[in-house]
Length: 534
Image 1: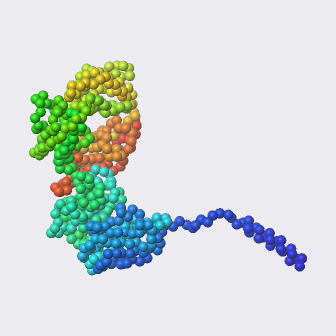
Image 2: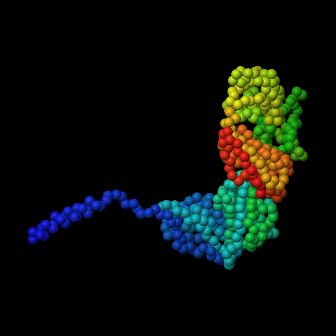
Image 3: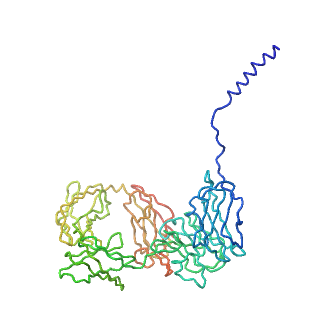
């Protein structure tokens, strides 16, 4: 009995030791779910033939929801009336209610992209595709290709790629009014695309980077790419389409009066010396002057003296196109002369200092321009008046690490209304040459000239360019430290600018290629590169 009593405290102590070993904490809930939803069954089954109904149910093993389904879902061929897709919140079933009349003997594909996700962790069922046919078989042909951008290093994503069936009803204008027979989208910045479940036949292959996402080409807003020839499916050919923005045909836009003596005439497309003539009866001393806006497609038209007429009638001529327009006049304030500088602070040694005016400049007096450096040494500039753009160009020799004080005495600039400037002051400074970098570029294996060699920044804005008519080394100097791209434009028509294409004329844009790597320009560093063209 005594021995048994001795075991009791020992057992008690052992039990306490087990209690102390237990760790306190919250339940972890197990490992994170990383598995996408799994389809349990579909009604009708995926890849069904002889489809007759208007509702499809797809059941999953867990609760799902739809994420950005309006952006992700691609239905091919596109439907005139979009189907109703549910759930709106969460469910184990995805329901497709078809609102459109289905075409006979046609294979339909619903590609959900990454829009189907589970309710908890949003694991996506990637690029799930539901396919059915209203006929007795599923079309199974494929077409692959690539989309690139005429001016950008990589195409914008996603880009819509489209096939139009070429049959007895086909015409080139179909892309402006009707949806295509098949559609797909580029998946990533490589621009690659693939059509599946295609029917044998002849097709027009196009690509659109759209603004409205309606599969209709709208030249004012959309970029287009196309293959010139009609393609036949089946084919093993891989096609490349180049996206570009068309220059619209010339179109006159009604004028707007924005000042007592100031009218703006807008237009679309390219113009050659747009001519504006007043047809109304005006005083004998009536005068007019005009210049092109630097940014917008518009002409600034200035006149004097101010008129008391209720309206003015104008003719606007561009080549052989003549438009007549009537403008109702308003009582507005007269503009007074204002001058602004194109640069402030730092100016690059090779740059020209420009002065812009809000009213037309007609005369300059170079003797009333004074430029002094930090030692107060007087520098006499050369000043030119650019009447086409309405600014004064001030040329003067500039030195490194120097400060310049620019003074315009009254009467240095005179405008169309005989108003002159008051005294104006501007301060500029230059950096050391060592604060900039340079790039020397040598081209090899050039098949034809001329070429436009452009240095562009990370946003593809042109920083500097050279026009090359023969083999030569191109030097970009005084470049601010940053990263840049080199862009080569093949100027086939020798007009010293890049020309876009035209779908209706089956004209591709002038070819552009990029140097294969981004270039880092560093201060006080000269970079030498060789570009072997392919």
